[in-house]
Length: 236
Image (cartoon, helix red, strand yellow):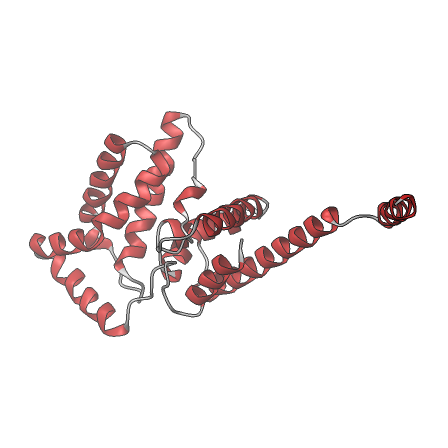
């Protein structure tokens, strides 16, 4: 990762959203949503409001995993049908309603892959750290080289940490929603995220140092160059 990419990710970890993961909803917003869920158990129109709140994010989550518009649309519809069917059994545990929806989505997508006999594919291109501004050609080349190094470093991470980054930057999920999917507490997700960023920074720093060392001339090469320069000066 180039320095800018890690800085953006670290800003996200500290609570801002320069282009990274979704911000945690404020307490009053959770209270409003909890009241909406309670209404939805008796009024289907209220469930329609919940649908409008989450349908785009659920669809993006599904599509990134099935890579097919028709299947993504079908699965998204099934997710909300299942949520409506099971809404009476939903218990408000202080988590966003979306955390429950994403758990349903995770299970249905997993079933879809099992039925299709396919391996779940998580494209790293869905994780975007790019700055949205026009750049000079030289800057663009440097950025692309930095991104290539970033993707290579991410590929070297353990699968759990790769999933965390994809959920945060690809799916734009909150820490609470990620915790629900990965069956970890919000605090554990935050800790894992900080450790993941630290590991990426260490990896990329080592790769940069190795690259500089490979580009530097060895002592024997340096001595040989001095001797060759001396001969040319003497001959002149």
